[in-house]
Length: 67
Image (tube, rainbow, N blue to C red; front, top):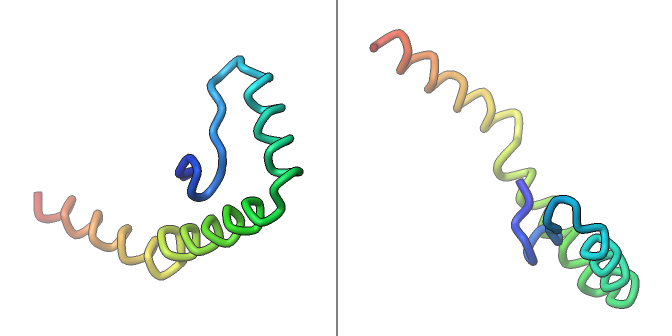
Protein backbone atom coordinates (compact mmCIF):
# COMPACT_ATOMS: atom_id res chain seq x y z
CA UNK A 1 0.00 0.00 0.00
CA UNK A 2 3.02 2.31 0.41
CA UNK A 3 4.75 3.60 -2.70
CA UNK A 4 8.27 4.49 -1.61
CA UNK A 5 8.96 8.18 -2.11
CA UNK A 6 5.41 8.83 -3.32
CA UNK A 7 3.03 7.94 -0.48
CA UNK A 8 5.57 7.26 2.26
CA UNK A 9 9.13 6.22 2.97
CA UNK A 10 9.97 2.55 3.31
CA UNK A 11 12.69 1.06 5.46
CA UNK A 12 14.16 -2.42 5.31
CA UNK A 13 13.22 -4.82 8.11
CA UNK A 14 15.54 -4.72 11.11
CA UNK A 15 17.08 -1.41 10.01
CA UNK A 16 16.10 1.09 12.71
CA UNK A 17 18.70 3.55 11.44
CA UNK A 18 16.72 3.83 8.21
CA UNK A 19 13.54 4.56 10.14
CA UNK A 20 15.39 7.19 12.17
CA UNK A 21 16.78 8.72 8.98
CA UNK A 22 13.32 8.90 7.43
CA UNK A 23 11.88 10.51 10.56
CA UNK A 24 14.67 13.08 10.55
CA UNK A 25 14.08 13.78 6.87
CA UNK A 26 10.36 14.30 7.42
CA UNK A 27 10.96 16.59 10.38
CA UNK A 28 13.42 18.65 8.35
CA UNK A 29 11.30 18.80 5.19
CA UNK A 30 7.72 19.70 6.08
CA UNK A 31 6.84 20.16 2.39
CA UNK A 32 7.86 16.55 1.68
CA UNK A 33 5.81 15.44 4.67
CA UNK A 34 2.75 17.28 3.30
CA UNK A 35 3.21 15.89 -0.22
CA UNK A 36 3.54 12.31 1.00
CA UNK A 37 0.45 12.71 3.21
CA UNK A 38 -1.65 14.20 0.39
CA UNK A 39 -0.50 11.54 -2.07
CA UNK A 40 -1.21 8.79 0.45
CA UNK A 41 -4.73 10.07 1.05
CA UNK A 42 -5.48 10.20 -2.69
CA UNK A 43 -4.00 6.74 -3.16
CA UNK A 44 -6.15 5.23 -0.40
CA UNK A 45 -9.30 7.01 -1.58
CA UNK A 46 -8.79 5.72 -5.13
CA UNK A 47 -7.68 2.17 -4.37
CA UNK A 48 -9.57 1.33 -1.19
CA UNK A 49 -12.88 3.18 -1.41
CA UNK A 50 -16.07 1.37 -0.43
CA UNK A 51 -17.25 1.57 -4.04
CA UNK A 52 -14.05 -0.01 -5.33
CA UNK A 53 -14.07 -2.76 -2.70
CA UNK A 54 -17.71 -3.62 -3.49
CA UNK A 55 -17.04 -3.67 -7.23
CA UNK A 56 -13.93 -5.84 -6.78
CA UNK A 57 -15.81 -8.24 -4.47
CA UNK A 58 -18.71 -8.45 -6.92
CA UNK A 59 -16.34 -9.16 -9.81
CA UNK A 60 -14.58 -11.88 -7.78
CA UNK A 61 -17.85 -13.56 -6.82
CA UNK A 62 -19.07 -13.50 -10.43
CA UNK A 63 -15.78 -15.01 -11.61
CA UNK A 64 -16.00 -17.74 -8.97
CA UNK A 65 -19.57 -18.65 -9.85
CA UNK A 66 -18.74 -18.82 -13.57
CA UNK A 67 -15.70 -21.04 -13.03
